Length: 298
Image (cartoon, rainbow, N blue to C red; front, side, top):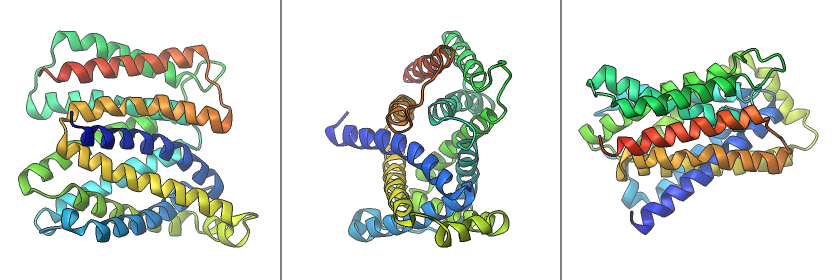
């Protein structure tokens, strides 16, 4: 791997880990996953537009109309993926939510089997079993009587949607030679519009309270700016890495996100996780890493 690709991979990991933690703070500050999403996407649009102007020779959106409907569809799916995560963060710690998102790897295997008839080697079933066991342990964490926390399913559903997006993005990039920045930019606009509709429909009062009744609005603004910077960085690096690197390498790097998010969450909130939580966390990471590395040879 070249030095440039390694730098973009590290930036992707750091940006995504900080984004998840800061996003939870934004949701808490607004008391609304939709208002938080609207403000974050608005600020991110500003940063993406600035990046486009600065690097327009490399990132000009060429012929966007050709795969327009498919690109819009990806944006809608990405919005649902993002909104489910925002809702889930109201009930699930960041460290658990992010590790449950890694079940995306299982859905990639499932869709590969169903859509492309890709055979799953027997050795992968060991790693699949480890991941599923880890997911079950993670879902058990949130209640002292060991009943399932159904909000965990929001992150698993998000993982499935993210896997669908990955296939669709790769299809657009390969068939239409669409630039990674064009997809990221359109994705953000679609999400912004849909977040706006949801915020106006369900959380109008929270939006008003944020700007007119907040005790320290500038602290909130700073958090949103930092979170938007991370979101802009992760969108640029993720789509760029999907285009420049094999998918299995990108997915392998992303397995570091839950661990870094857990460290950041502990540093900010002083949260702790139980032993069973840690075991489930590690099983998901080990299983995902095994599947991802093994996929290099298939």
